[in-house]
Image (cartoon, rainbow, N blue to C red):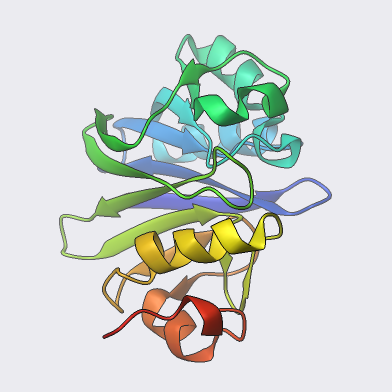
Length: 195
């Protein structure tokens, strides 16, 4: 599986391209401010063709280029309906469940708290790895801002139930794992789940 990630814009938002392999269809996740040029460069570098644009939530730093990229490539931009008003650009609804796109099987988990429509995208790689694209819900050593009680419930019910070896690809900063955050993230004390 191919995962290409890079940070863009003043807020250094992580944009990701996901594909089964080089020279295949792909999914663009969270193309934020000033992301379009870097996305196009990565598409050319890896021989990828976008099939859809997805967003973890509707804040402009994560979706500023989503509409333009979707239109340029003639593909849909999908976002949870609860965040459509935040995005400032038209989007198709994205709900919880499993979507199959670009040869990938992606589980969409609704994780309200940072925003009402925040979601996490989970994938299992052919090599046996597990990925969770967490947007601004969970970071290495931190969690998102927002409705703290709702956010803690989402973390407890949807993320801390995942296997420890799940690789977390957050919306800002570097990658981590669920296991590392479970034992070292100072913000997760109130979200602990029984092991």
